[in-house]
Length: 326
Ligand code: GAL
Image (cartoon, rainbow, N blue to C red; front, side, top):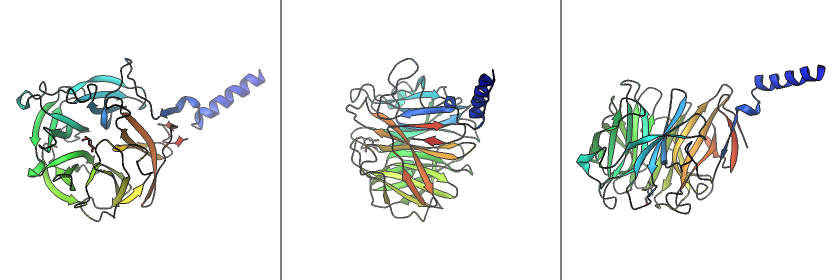
């Protein structure tokens, strides 16, 4: 009896100290993800929001490789591991009949606008051999609702390709894209309703960066980006500043020479009771085919203005405390 009580007390203390195995989620890299219906998750170059206690992820549906232009799928999950397919939220020609079938959607990114309560997607909206160089904005009343085209074109008249979004803590929201034939990065401030780009700052002129991803750590912004080498991975570089429109430090190498065979898509912030953990999410494209491209996740640590990638084939994360361990 005494032994049973001791065992029960031990289990209870494990739960209290947050070390109970039940709370750790294992993230495995390098494998295809399957959704809760058993289908391969198709959400490449993903974008994420937290909403009602769940992660929502949007991304490119590359099921048909190059035969059918990618649409945008929406999934939800509590732990970044078990993904439920919600629906296809943007389908070429169907969602945007006025724009026909010839559009290619890349790097769709999802946001919730706290001012309007709407869910907004910004994406790269391409046609031809990347000649259109346009973006598009879609909006829905609910996260899994009907997304309608709000606008498409070149933001503020500027040619725009690979892209991302960034919502700052004060509510200011940005669309960031590779501009003018991949020469620069453009930081576009969005209007309060997120419907249009209203201010432009050119960053990293002539440095040919793409796949940008920004995260705020304290008062400092870090931007990760890659060079332009199509599906082939290359060296990720990082820069930081305390003012998004100026003062970005010279680009510095981070991780190995291919970003562990990935290209950045998003940086997630897990604010736990014990610590805040930052997760890099990137695409391992053409692995070996386009539909089999993998989504890779690993922790990044920050120390002042320094940061480090911690690529691992698998690691555990505790979403409650924010802790992670190899
Ligand atoms: C990459 C880009 C991807 C996609 C691809 C096509 O450079 O990051 O989003 O456009 O090229 O080759």
